[in-house]
Image (cartoon, rainbow, N blue to C red; front, side, top):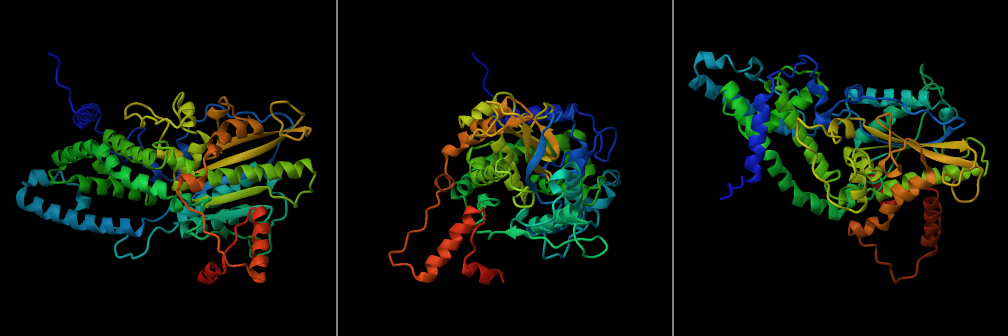
Length: 519
């Protein structure tokens, strides 16, 4: 007679229990080589994420090649907790006070000594705040320093006088994203003007209405994605439950406080905020041992994978407008070079600042962070397995994929000599190659034979084209506006002419109504 099958949640809980029990109980305060700040998923600070990235060897730029265009897609820098999360921390303070009162009434003095002293009387650093989510000073520094490194790395690209059509800076209409764009612009253009001791210059940051920004906030307008996320979130919570239940049981046993899984979830969030924003690792983070941190990090990475990444093709297919914008900008740069346009008359960099929900799908469209043959699977729109649990290694880690200020740069190179497999159509005497930098580190492209320098035409054919069989409006179920039967007035015709003109140049029109609202 066959042995009865163990239900998956129970089996997962058993595996977690064995692994955690076998792991050394080492506090998350920096003992040994372990640093909890490297395991905060997408709440990880950019300098920490860069410091934990191992680079075996930097690919050499082919002889005679030079950069002619740069695309940047960046997440905003480190931010304060959002208003919703601030309320969660306020509730946690009330809950910890109740747990302490309960413990003081029922526990012996020896047991009370096991309770960390910081819990008694703890109050949130953000108590009483009614606003949240803004860029912090650390986040400003992340983007400013990123800009100075980019300017130094690509000196020839940024030696022209500033003009918004040469160096285009774009951001979403969310304050932390636009503030990140400003911080980057200050670093990039320092010394380029006549304003103040730093010789700064004023620069333009373009934003589109949050309701219609399908290039940087495509997730806001995609009804199919929103329906998928609403349907899938409960499943993700069920997948996380066994780990939260085991960690909760371990903390109750360790500290003799009647924690619930919701308490542990909030304490893990507090740990991430303290470690990332305040560099405090010996309070909330100190509650968890090393193995528990690894598993809690995995639950965050799992959520990002399923709801923003490779968990379903809609997650990244909806990013097609952004991918098209990137390719279009490179094609325009190639045309400018082939037609020998003088410097200062064409765009050299398109710099975008948005959110994790922007950067993660874009990384997936490029095929980054895949395991083995998974690139072929996403081209066929097959489901991918969730990231393996600790102690197994995995490519998909939120601290690497999209930390604060996380970014992808697509660098377009012009190289001498005509080659049949690398040149674009038109018979030009140059070859053009694309290099992808993730968080400033060159990465190989699975869709281009794991090359670091992908011929532009091959990049379009093998990485971009398979996605183009989809249309944003169709996959997101957006209905085009119904044309009016009334004849257009002369004013409307003139307005439409200029809308078409600007659209051809890569700009989006803003309606008179939205202008009034923004003013």
